[in-house]
Image 1 (tube, rainbow, N blue to C red):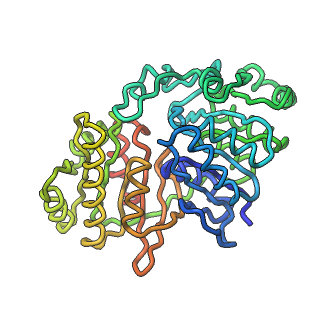
Image 2: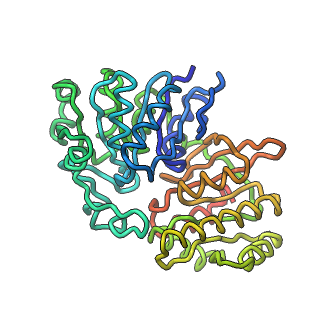
Image 3: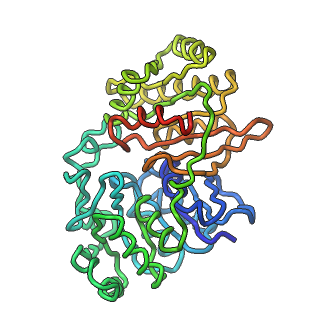
Length: 391
């Protein structure tokens, strides 16, 4: 049986939280409800509910809860997207735990929680690019208000003063009643203090981003996977950009400027596929991306389908052994097209950037590097490209 079960709502999130636990044993990420082999020490379940309605997501996670063994962790988006409130309350009930403890801070990527409000690089999340995301804008960062609106109960907020006192103060604060709690955190040290208390009490469901996942791993004595980066393929690289987030677009632009990696916009015809195939055949790297303009939902879906079809065809035709993907939905659907049913995270190349192996029936394993669209500074892809640690 697994020592830990992580519940995530999309695939990039499943990977960036799951990779935090690789030093504790074999980590397997799956997205189909199926029995897990005894070799898995940590199981990460991608429920694929990021875009589901709250009630639908809550019902779905009850089915997934049957696969839980060991400690449980609910991974939520660090910018408050998705039905994490409904899922967390439903999962806590299924597992017989008290009210969820929400701590979405991820200091390594600039996400902090102060006064119960989520900040990104010190600014309210709704005032950043996440507030104007063309697909899923975040309209507010007041966690207590958000939880009350969705669950009908207002959580207590444990501030930094309590968190940073002796552990007994935090333990007492968490032990006051069984309702939901929001915990402020600005640093990894804050999250580690919370993680130690959560492990000692073990009657609450921890809910957080990869930030709290990493803190829990350290509290369990498992060192960071960032220290075990492996060298990878130096052959042609296909980048698949299914994220319309402005941060991701700037990263791609910088990669073109600094490394000459072309960005091919997927259109209705076969032109992008042909151009990308030619570039990869010459040993170069290339990016397939969606149009930058805002599209109607049906046109966006059509463009994404085309992007995925072309990306899968390139992987197969060119015999690629590595692919880089941004966006959890894009990654999940690309893996489905390639017949991949699980991913095994190996290491973290940068906060939120995960290197994983995709076993493939009847074919060689595929190395997958993934990132949520909104992670990293503008030069992230350039830095990764020039380090040579995985290209």
